Image (tube, rainbow, N blue to C red; front, side, top):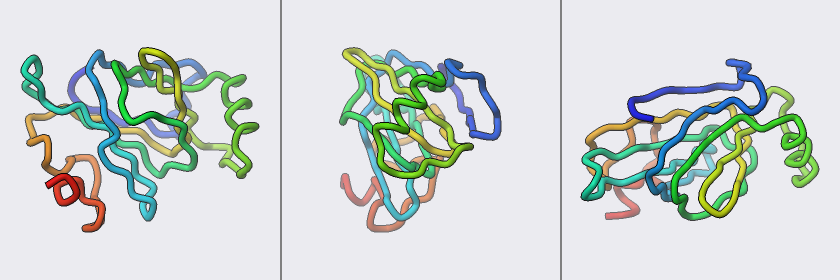
Length: 144
């Protein structure tokens, strides 16, 4: 999937709906607690002349890994939503977006209000077009 897009809880996608898919490797690039933003990035590589950013915000709960070998994001089924609710001992908003992150070797989840993605030719260490990062968590400063 190329280009850009956004899905929010208000879009009312049916359970199991595909949101985003890429065969590229994605890395946990940045996370800021104060704004509840999590950025996954697929940096430029020899075979790719672009980078891809995926931003989740505001994140309520997450189960994830440091890297994804291919990434497919889909809306959780009703059973998966129930399992996620039972796993976490917190009140999750009824209107939250429950997302399943599928990759080689397993699945993770993110509960948030929105997910956005964009593909561009920005520098790997440059800021994302998708979100504002407080100075202390700006990926360009951390990874310098």
